Image (cartoon, rainbow, N blue to C red; front, side, top):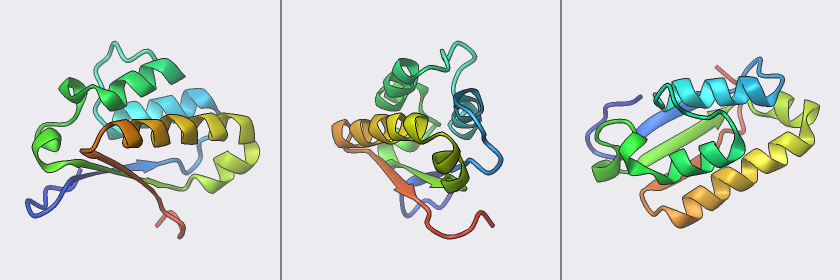
Length: 109
């Protein structure tokens, strides 16, 4: 997480090497420091993205920017799963003004 006090809290969701939904959910749980009870399914992801009580400290006040990088190989290998992930991320950002999700178009480094 980035601690720059001038803008939103930044969480990098690095999907480099992710090959399936389970890997995606594990990376999301780590990137957002989600609680152990995070269900690792689409509904649980949607709920967690909308539930400010599980967001990293300071994110509610400052906003939360999730930067997704290294997503293209996963999207190519699992297009159906990726479409669902995009839908969940988009809907959460649309519903929650403090949340922004950005897909990095460059490399993973």
